[in-house]
Image 1 (cartoon, rainbow, N blue to C red):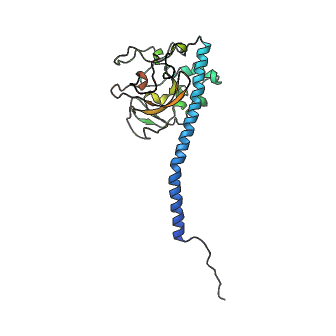
Image 2 (tube, rainbow, N blue to C red):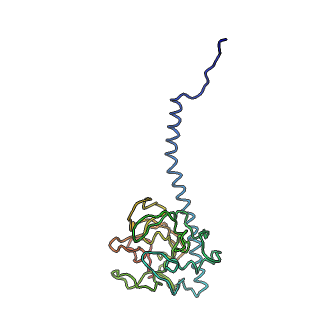
Image 3 (cartoon, rainbow, N blue to C red):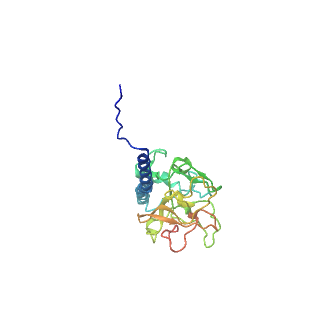
Length: 255
């Protein structure tokens, strides 16, 4: 008995290859869009976090005679973070104003930038795939306070400076240019490098600073910008140790 088979209407090999090629092209076009959307969402979350923390700092000042946070045992050791670092210790003073009680932890989400997924060791310049907000040495925070002037250790020798810049312990009303003076910022801006621009690339060794790396920064008047941070390779010190030259939209020193 002779079989009666009918060829189906499936794809030919050439048609399959064309479809796969089209899918590949569409994916290549969509990936940058999706990546950009993710980066924008992370910056928006970071902006919201900084807005709440900035308000917490100002509420703290309002409850303490208009005086910004300061700690008697703060230090500004280079480079290692520690819970008493002048840029970190503020969290213990203001966190109750964002509804956090008890010991700090990695679950303190308002202090966690979603782009905080790596950091550089300042001494070695090497890359680590850990988040700063996951580390106790940063008091589980991605954000720092402009308070190096409250440090008890001596500042490094920088021409024209006799002390660390910062606003720790100052009256909020004494800041003459609140539009430009940093209050709270991403800790990556200390060195600087950028979580949002993914610089340096993962695995890149011995990077000590990237001039104009962009970080989320909140200011004494409450506004927040995605700002370029100045790094002076001649000093080879954290960028929080000195004010930037003219043309930058931020300043560490209050006056």
